[in-house]
Length: 87
Image 1: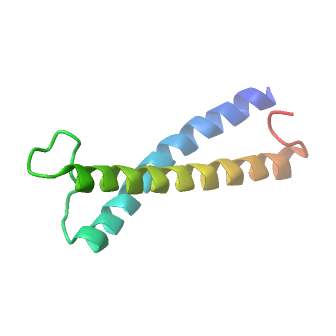
Image 2 (image 1 turned 180 degrees about the vertical axis):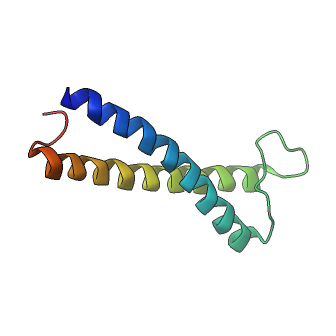
């Protein structure tokens, strides 16, 4: 039962994390590039360097937000149940 509850929390927090990381990336990209929108991989008007830099920054932000949310969720489950999830 605890695993099912943790998976439900994980799914919801994953969606929230994706949304949050998207918002953070948009703001970081505006500061870095001075543009509102980051280039898409298929955008012809951008070069390889800008496309790959945008992808790297976006991936790093997503990974950081996901790790923070996963860790906080696991600690919350441990605080609520006395057990670390997955053990």
